[in-house]
Image (cartoon, rainbow, N blue to C red):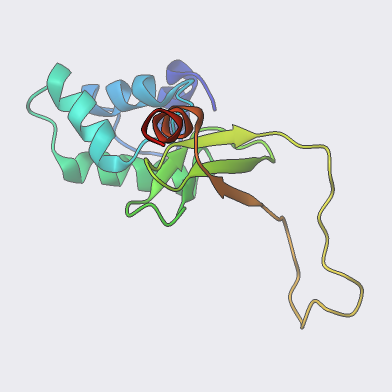
Amino acid sequence: MKTPAELTELFRTRGFKVTPQRQMLFRLLHGNDVHPTAESLYAAASAEMPTISLRTVYQTLSDLESMGEIQQLDMGTGSSRFDPNTDVHHHLVCERCGKVRDLYADFAISVPRGRAQGFTVKNAEVVFRGLCDTCKQGDEHHG
């Protein structure tokens, strides 16, 4: 993901208004590897700037997604998650606490010849589901 300063410049060149709220969201997303929800970003942002609205958070995330700066993920954890890492990668998802982590793997996934059913496939992502280390430890202590 671009730095907050680069995103500010990108928004300006696209004719978007750059507000202190948006700049704070750029900062909160930069280097964020926990795949936050809009709600968790709103909670972090409103602690710093109580006047920010959830609508501003959603609009900013939507604008960033349309520019290709973040990816919206639906991991089946209840809320969409936002990933500022736009590199090709996969995900590990904890089925208990919903934690999502990036996974880089050196395997190639492709649709077998003749099975694409008319689709033009641009990319593929694998979601591995299981228990994170924290939830697994909880099981061991209670088992």
